[in-house]
Image (tube, rainbow over all chains, first blue to last red; front, side, top):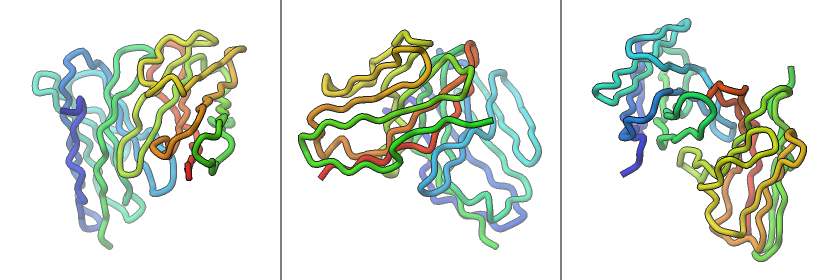
Length: 111
Length: 113
């Protein structure tokens, strides 16, 4: 069992709708969580990070963390075709430690 | 400012050849990470440096893989006697001290024939 699990998708969402991406993790020692966006053939780009239980909003993006349920999610509001990419969830400790990535969810926004 | 840079961007090697992949982190970032990403998978951790010290090399898949960062800045990942299963994208990331927000370079795509 991988330490970080994601639904590989593909997930298709109409333009303008809310895209919901989910991730679960098994290591209760994980303290920090990251969402990366990866376009095909490109490297991962950090879009959100969250350390505390609850919600964290940044523009159209909201990250949610529930440590009791070991669950992390990313909501993308007003989805745009440019949001079409693979979204990687990653967990790590506090400070400088390796990140453990899920396999990624491929998101397609349908115009 | 400049981001993480990696070279070469693409490398084709014959099985058995040695390769060296370079990473130049963001200026001021003391932490440097190497990851391996196979097609359709998430990045997998290889090794981690804080300044010149290699603090974690638990992800290196075999003793054919070796990494160094002698002056605490540029790092080199060396793969000896390459095998077909080494074909992947090798990603370098850097972060500030005490901060786990890692920023990735463009990667080196290694193809072993």
